[in-house]
Image (cartoon, rainbow, N blue to C red; front, side, top):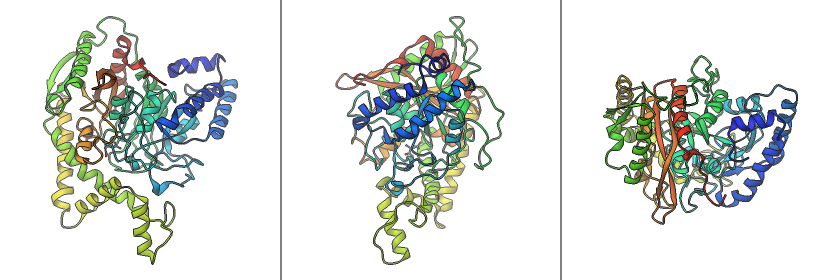
Length: 493
Ligand code: GLN
């Protein structure tokens, strides 16, 4: 059961071969067995979860099921879910029970999906290894000593270890795609504005976007069908016409199903800094695309190297503003002892935030300060425009861009925690996509061996033009029909 696609599960539910309560119980059992070690979930609430599953079974019996009715999903702990503890991986929100649902949660509820629990994540989604979480690190199911990637590390481990049918994540600079690459599953960051940010705890609002994390492109298409849509409560939500993201998923009818597709390879994505074993896996995947009929063209995204410095001005600037709401007054952590109001603010924030979050707040307030605004913030905004223009030019030469999703395979826990810049470089191939607001995804492309011979997953990144998710998913789907990387499971789970 745990390797079934969402479509297969839906068919089994419709045919009454299995109930949602049965599927959900099986996942809860697996979570109870593996979560104490893997630490993928911060909060579980089996009673609530099973009540949702029972309601889904009733709905199926009444004959008004939708494709995801009764399917158990793991929700990143960045989404407010009514009555659920919602921590965003922070001590600041350790005891925060959300009084309302995020837009994404509402949509899954309306579709009849079941919420299995809230997944672990880097604190306020700041990180690439899940090691900044107040709730402890997460194990990569492929090698327990290694990180799952971040910030959606709990969701990543949960999908890889089959502790859920699929999961949600959010991606501000790579937090869906990098963990998808490090844990060997499919993850998609949609076009900015396609999925509602309402009730999704804000990190860097002009970059944050929620998306699906699943076993295959077909599963992601079904998830995106539920997630995408205009929300008037999110001022940057886009009024894009409703699409069926499964509509371009075709069975490979010939041996050249992708004839006519132009795939651009940015030379900057294959330059210094890319691990040799990862490059080999990615190049093999591109060869497979050649065999499927795609035409490969060389392109350039000349400002790629500026994307990390630009991001680490803009994201902290927005974060410092977004996180100013955590002052210990209305909700969140409040220091137990303080002298006066100012002291209460200071102590509550000093105690409630971890080191990485503080680092970002400091950088953010610095670059926004009157004396430095023009030199840093304004300049970064200008370069952001140039980075977006690189993609506009590139898409004149190709339909889709491909490259690695992350520069290396999963690294050991502890390896980069004391070196923020090397941690930041994990997102070298993903961040520009967020800065440009484009959709990007990572799909499993094979394995590279670790030093001790363990297979570690490698992801292929596929970047599309604005709102081209349906085509990206079909391009990924064509590959997933001739390869079986996406069906591989780690041992020991
Ligand atoms: N790793 C990046 C950061 O630390 C991106 C995180 C994200 O996408 N949420 O900011």
